Image 1 (cartoon, rainbow, N blue to C red):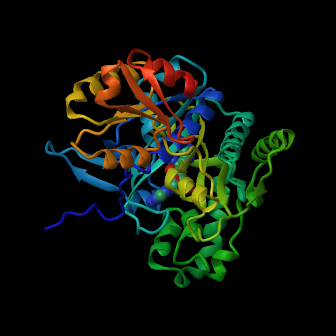
Image 2 (image 1 turned 180 degrees about the vertical axis):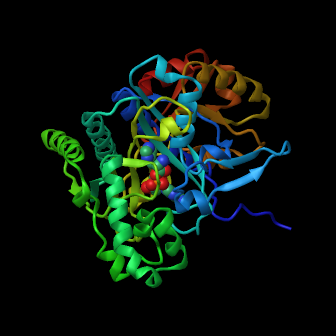
Length: 422
Ligand code: HAM
C-alpha cells in the first residue's frame, strides 16, 4: 500500500526549498525596512476565533477544518492569519504598550477548497497587520508596502486594485441598497444567495455561481453610498498614494470575501499568462470592529496577506530566479578509505571557518563522489590522496577553471576562504 499526501497539499522537496527561503528572505527584509516585527501564533485556535460573527463569510462557513480534540474542545485550523493575530494582540494586551503595533507573519493556513493550480487546502501566507490606529496614512502605508514588495520581487504586470466600503454607517447604507436591489430578483439567485440576502447581501457579489448574472453585474457599488467622512477618508488615502507615485486602479466592485472589512480594501492582481482565475496574489483592508469583537478595546487595524505559492508561481511564469540554488564552497573527495577520519576533521574545520562544505558518506568510487560534488555545485574540490597526504598536502581544484593546486593540509580553509571571499 502506498500512502500519498493529503489532497490539496504538496511537499517542498530539498531541491526546491531554496526558492521558499529566498522568498522568505525578501519578505523579512522588506518588512523590517518598514519597521514591522514578526509574530508567530498557533495554527489551531478555539473555533470562536473564526466562527464568531453573524455575517459569516463563505470561507469561514464552509471551508474551515473544524474538529473536537480529545478533551472535547472545538478547535479550528486557521484559515487565515488576521483573526489569530488579533486574538493574541488582545490576550497579550499589546494595546497597552504602544499606540500602534506593526506585525507580520509567515505560515500555513487551511481551507477546504477545490484544489487547482494556485489553490490548495494547506497554503502559506505572509501577512501584515498594523493595529491600533485609524489613519488614512496608515492605509496608504500598507498599500505602498504591498506594491513595493511586489516591485522588489521583480514582478511586472501587477495591478493594485483599491476600493472603499466606507465606515459602519456607509457600509450599512450600502448593504441596505444591495438588499433593495436583490430582493425583487431573489428567485434568480442560487440557493445560498437566497439566504445571503438576509444574512449579508454583500456576499452575493462574490458568489461563484451567480457572479455572471445580470442582476449581480448591475448591483450598486459602495462608492455611491459613502457618507462625507468616508469619502474624505478615501480621498486622503488616494492623495498619499498619488504623492508617492504608486499606480493603482479604483475597482468599484471590489468588496473582498471576508466579513471584517470597512473603509479601504485592496487586492494585488498579477496579469500573468496561464494564471487563469488564480491571479489574485494578495489582498487586505481595514477592519474596525475585529479587535473589539475578540474582547479588546475599540481599536481599528489594517492589513493584507499574500499567497506564497501564488507568488512563486508568478515568479516562475515570469522566469525570475530570486536566488540561484545554494552552492557548496568545498567538497572533499577521499581517494583512500584510510583517510576518512582526516576528511571528517577537515570538513569540521571548513564548516567552523564558515565555508559551506560536504563530503560523501557512502563508500563510493572516486567517479561517483565527483559526480555528486558537481551535482551539488561545489566551487572547490578538496582531493585527499595518500601520496600528497604523506607530504602534508591536498589537491584543491577549482571546478570552474579546472586549475588544481597542491595546498598544505593546515592551510585548506585559509586557501578556500580567500578564493571565495569569505
Ligand atoms: P484572503 O484574500 O482570503 O485574505 O487571502 C489572501 C491571499 O491568500 C489570497 O489573495 C491568495 O493569494 C492566498 N490564498 C487564499 N486562499 C488560498 C488557497 N486556498 N490556496 C492558495 N492561496 C490562497 C486573507 O486571508 C486576509 N486575512 C488578509 C488580511 C490581512 N486582511 C487584513 N489583514
